[in-house]
Length: 355
Ligand code: PMP
Image (cartoon, rainbow, N blue to C red):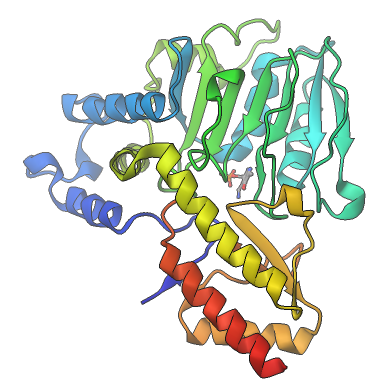
């Protein structure tokens, strides 16, 4: 059996793979593949409707929220957000707590003023800054809820009256929170929601449309809202895989149940790291991510040796991000607890062998 700890694209439920592959051959018993039907058919409209309503249900969203499935990955949201919300003379507040957040800051600067309220860059983003002020005049406050590369996660929603915008690419639907507190949430689908190629955007209906700049129709959130997320051809198959994954999540007990499993997996892994002196977790304990755990071994040869043991044991995706090194273990919603048991057993055996 293969254990998949990839950071994204990453593991999805086995039943989703099964159902998605069946739909490629014969979708809804139509005798046609999902890949060859029009997006304006009743059959695909039903997929889009169900995907949108499952997001609303699983996240307990109020009626003011629109659910969109857009192209371009989370990186497109780095600029689509400020293009729609930040006028040239206005200021947006950003928290700089990881490489992805810093990319969002870079793009926002193309459109208006950016005030970085706090940064943990000086310590290689190993903690989440706290105790910063967000000016009331900021048009929005942007942060990354989970830093996929560095393995940190924000465990509380910041207290502010400024509209919140969050990149939830790597922890969406993994933990319960008051999603209605956010004016805009975006997430690339390829971790907890589905296949790469689509972006989930949850947006307050009344937040876009206040900037003076002109923008391409495809970039304007209002056009996507008006057209029910079908302004142009959506990524049909990727949306279908999202719908299947959301169905699976609902059947599994929803966000509350998956949070318990995610906490159990993370506890086993972090307890193991903390109990074995050969491994070291550089991240501040209170900011540890439930989704992506980063850890190291001081000795470079031992690091290589452990990676080759992982490979031999069919543990995939354990190598750290190229900018951080060491190991990164991603434990997204679909990763079974047993995979973490296999990994931690291997870590214990390795530590024993190394004395
Ligand atoms: N934000 C976060 C937190 C991410 O983890 C990633 C991708 N791993 C991105 C943004 C960029 O996503 P995409 O590749 O879909 O543009």
